[in-house]
Amino acid sequence: MPKILMLSVREHEKAAIKDWEERNQVEVETVSWELHPETAPKVDGFDGLVVQQRSKIEAAVYPILKRANLKQITTRTAGYDMVDLKAAAANGLVVTNVPAYSPRSVAELALAHTMRLIRNLEIFDKRMEKQDFRWEGLQAAEIHSLTIGIIGAGRIGETSARIFKALGARVIAYDIKEREELKDLLEYKSKEEVLAQADVICLHVDLNPSSVNLIDEKALSLMKPTAYLVNECRGPVVDTDALIAALEKNKIAGAALDTLTGEENFFNFNLAGKKLPSVQLEKLRSFNNVILTPHVGFYTNIAVQNMVDISLNDVVTILNGGKSVHQV
Ligand code: NAD
Image 1 (cartoon, rainbow, N blue to C red):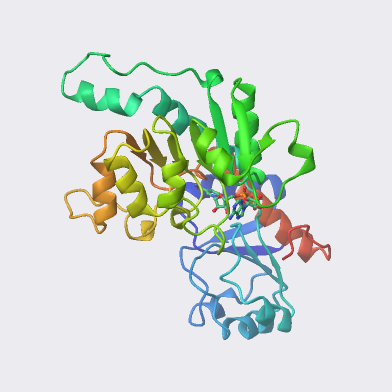
Image 2 (cartoon, rainbow, N blue to C red):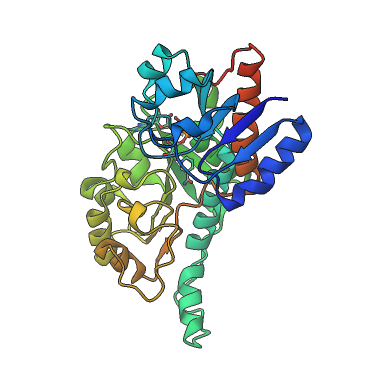
């Protein structure tokens, strides 16, 4: 029976891994450490390897894996920039990733954030904490009366568009690559038109040089003062200082952010009672029309199971001499 070593395993993944082991009758050993030159010799005796880490897998690691007769490195993330593809190939290691573990997981958070914004739920919660139960000034709009602007209509953006369309909203989109097959679902527009016409802007681009600060002061100034910004993709896509300034001047109605520049210093940490390491985070937390979640778009039952299943299935395919469709 092959033995697979799974690295950087977090508690929330263990049930999904056990479930896969039972279904596939393959042994998976889970450890919490990452792959680096000092840990790499511990792969000896295993047939397959699954990683999940942000830090680089250094050049010295690949020959160690080769000597241990490993044939692949599989990352159970979409990003694979931590792997040196040339060094992997030079040592006979096939690299695979999990390009889409569940577009629904992120798209459903975009829906949840949008509904929370348009129904003023954050503001109601804050009022009610103070025993103020009035509804004055907080009439909501119904979702099917709104125009949703998707920026980045890729896998997740398309899924968001389908959800909003199913609820009766008009969906417009801006993407640098337009797809013919989406033209029944959404109306492609220029970036400026989407910003000016949408009641809710949902950001679903990947982070690349063209998408850094895609939402800057100028972009925010094009939005309607009644419109909301929802960022479910990557922090640097939004110029946070420009967003804070727009919120302070009521240039837009509010924002929901699952991701924020500098988030590696605070998201997924318990900082209760401590000074926050980001002035921007402090400022954003002070607005009653801003919703923050700590990068949890991906964190659902289906997405976690898919990350585990797709990565482990790929290891087995490669060990059996097959070719994974996720080879990068
Ligand atoms: P994707 O590659 O399928 O789609 C990205 C789309 O953005 C593409 O259609 C691309 O053409 C478009 N795009 C890129 N740069 C652009 C620009 N400057 N202007 C307009 N359009 C642009 O990716 P995906 O699977 O849909 O994922 C999108 C992003 O969501 C990921 O890259 C990741 O950053 C983020 N994400 C977040 C979470 C979370 O937990 N919040 C989870 C998974 C992914």
